[in-house]
Image 1 (cartoon, rainbow, N blue to C red):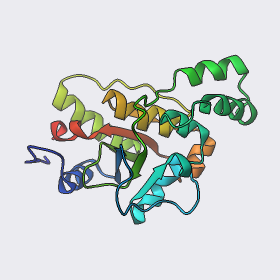
Image 2: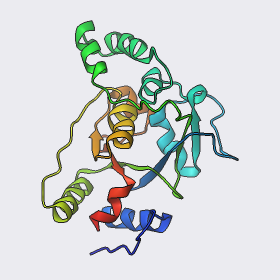
Image 3: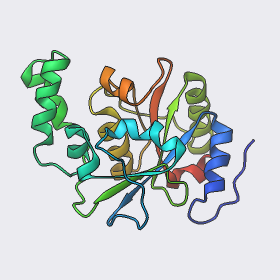
Image 4: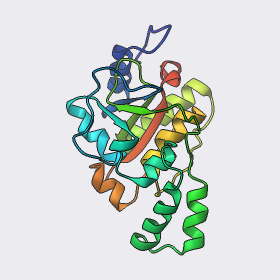
Amino acid sequence: MCRSDNGGAIRSDTIKLFERCMGGRWTGVSFHREVPAGARVPDRPMAFCAAIPASYTGALTLTRETVACPGARASFGWQANGDAEAVRRMTASVGLELPVAEKLLEAVPKILDSKIVAITVGDYRAPDILLSHMQPAHMTRFVQMWQNAFHENLSVSVSAFMSVCGHVAAQVYTNRKVCCAFGGAETRRNGCIGRDRLVVGVPVDLVGALF
């Protein structure tokens, strides 16, 4: 069984240990109240889901100006009318009726802290949350570790809309709970999410408790 001796803030070696225990690849995500000095920002705006595989070669820092998706900007509290734009995209591309799209979008978790100005994807020094594209076998292992640690089943909600930015990243950060999503066709394409994968987010303060 994997063990961790980390007694304080999570360290990068603890994340790597978690990664070895769980299998797959885990990406650290940090939320900032100021843009970190020396941060690497994208050359052009990109979707948040696309930043996860892009960060495998080096951490990326996103801001309001460098997030291309209106749904992500709304999830992170960076665009007041992001829901309206997302509703238009959902009705056009997915074929949902307007009332259904509006109801689904209203339920999407959002970060209400207006002081969050940047998000770093690929941060292993002091992340707030961890994200992974998990295979079913790895998810089964995660659930077993959860049951062993907390003596209860893992309860999650699943969505296919604004899934990685809202239902995983924003919700894990604000509610400090494990979340997962399958993602719609556009999200899976932009995020390079394999057909046998789902996106899982874990608040970093829960990692030590799982060992």
